[in-house]
Amino acid sequence: MSATGDSYIDSAKKNKKAGFLLKDKWWNILDNWKVGVVPLPLFILAGALIGVNCLYGHLSSSIVVMVATLAFFGFACGEFGKRLPYLGKIGAAAICATFIPSALVYYGWLPQDVVKSTTEFYKSTDILYLYICCIIVGSVMSMNRTTLIRGFFRIVFPMVCGEIVGMIVGVGVGYLLGMTPFQTFFFLVLPMMAGGVGEGAIPLSIGYATIMHMDQGVALGKVLPIVMLGGLCAVVMGGCLNQLGKRYPHLTGNGELMSDKHDDVGKSLTSELSGKVDVIAMASGALLAVLLYMVGMLIQRYTSLPAPVGMLFVAVLLKVANAISPRMQEGSQVVYKFFQSAVTYPILFAVGVAITPWHDLVSAFTLSNLIVIISTVGATTLTGALVGRKLGMHPIDVAVISCCQSGQGGTGAVAILSAADRMSLMPFAQIAIRVGGALNVALSLLVLSNFIL
Image 1 (cartoon, rainbow, N blue to C red):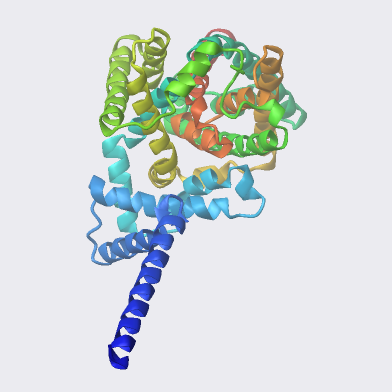
Image 2: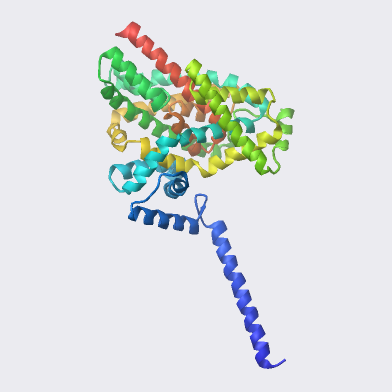
């Protein structure tokens, strides 16, 4: 073979090798360079496509476009929060994913097309409830059956003790700051523990308007900022608890309320659900979550029990009765992990844009309000942890549940558990927020109407 032929073959080999290296580098970027869970090249492409659509005023609110839009902005805000020094370790990602978009909307720095499309999508689809039902059912099906039974009975006592102590401490601190106990309890402490906006602040404002003969809009304007500020404080507290658990591992179960090391049933179930799952099992798990939420809606129609709580009780009953096969439980677990890792920050971004008024949040940032709120959340959390430890539970995980008692409803539970890195506690968080909040509102309005005014 001639020298020219040899050089041609060598050149071809070098080009082929260079092509392989270039391909490997590209694949490495796709697999390892990410913003949240989105590969960097796809993140850049999503931003460019959103920009082009906004430039021509054609950003659709359809689910296809919104998946890309919410993923782009949600993971951008979350990634920014994660990278903040110090704050990134105490829940800043969840806070930034919720409150940065709220501020951007208020100051007009977010394109109006994005605001309009996101708000329409969020309010027309109830996407939050799809998220919550998949998280709740998936986490219930992923839990150890015996631990679940023991946990549901044991968590009630720390919750009640935490609420009582938190209310007493909050009112006491408010009194020391010159506030009346009436003002502190009904307009600061109670709104935080009312169960969020839809199930808490709005019913509370209606009750205040009726009993105190005031305009509901005025009552809601006083209550709503406190709900959001209390939720913000609880998110930060959840992040701090997560760091405390990393520093003192013996105080936490990393998402488990009680140790199951002596539980043979739990061990066999865990190993059984550790294999690969097929697409059909995953689809069955997702459908199970949706159908159970529809059952919860029927329960709400006839009992006024919030649909997520009704669904939660049914899911627990099915789990306890071993009515769901291990394969379908594994499918539910995969769905849960998908929503936890891929949907949390996009959902929080939509919440920040659609239903989180920045000016209301800022108006609540007075020194006295902050001191009362921090004292209340801190006392509730600490009491829950101490009581939970006395009952043989992991104190930090119980403290996270107690934190959720001050959360902003379902969105607050998502943000708090995300900051605490304990999304598996969602079933207990729903009990703390929904049931605890409803009881707080009902009993307090009953006392207000019959014994105070």
